[in-house]
Length: 174
Length: 240
Image (cartoon, rainbow over all chains, first blue to last red; front, side):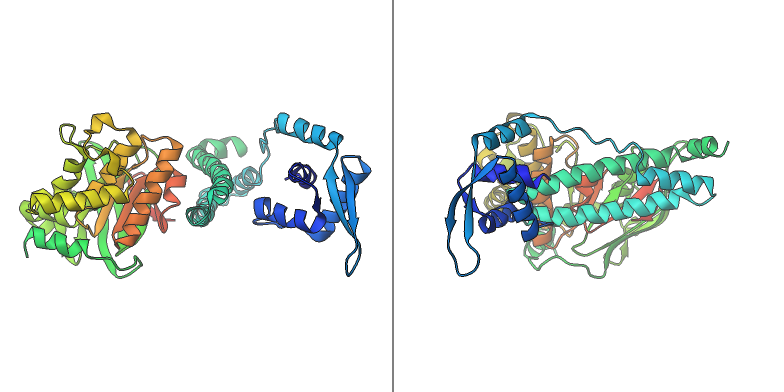
């Protein structure tokens, strides 16, 4: 998740203080990982330095002055480029699971037990996400579905690998 | 107690679903079709109100396990105990009555009667156990509303979408207030969005009526609606 890009996207809706930005970010994207205040102000400082935001107003408060940030034209262009550019698909060609299977087979340990335990753990996590999805709003559903589809892909790999273990063991130990 | 009475009693079971004593147990089932062994010592236990997913690859024996558990197929060896009684020891008539009054079924393609309207399809299990027409229709409408398909009540299955048809099938499975619902790949013929909706409605309705649910699926996202899973491979079961 790019905090700086999402901040810019949120600022397109109107100028905002760091405090309000953090809360808006957390409400939409920070269900598991709310952004820390330190990261909020470090990110805004970077955006300010890059000319993507500007200080729209400075308001006195009881403590330090409160700066209100606004997006610049360069910032809007940056958001447009970010949205238009597809993300690089992540292929995980050398996954930890693959490594564990190979190590288990080479050492004579049970790769089947390893895959079974992993399947159980994946399904447990999927049940938890499904409970959260069923009890949540549309945003929760979309976020949980994204995670669920990825876990499901892992599970399909686990099933296929389990079906090929004999062949794989022969290759690995030859 | 008549079948109609049993259905009335079951329909009133509105306590929250939860784990309890074993309601249905399959012990070491063996079943072959000719030379092909479908089940080779498969076991399954289901508590009242529990939702269990039966998972496994195609041909692993999971549908055969469901059919044996529901008394549709008789195992070659092993036994199925429902509510403390061995199903295999019951007469054909008693097993049929069990399926009509205690069990509900949802299949991959709905299997609605094509000539009947949706409301008639949902009423049918009640009519078969002697519930009067007006009362059966009233309960059918309630379930169609609950499954959000009351607007297709007077249409025949051929006039509704796959997702709507499957919701009608869920209503038909639950209208008698069964203690166990058997669902065999209930979302297998649906797109992702309709599949999700059917699963949400099916599991919510099962929990609200305290019905246990045996959910056969090869899809992990569908199995994730269950309380736990049982894996079937080569006709044998392993608890997840």
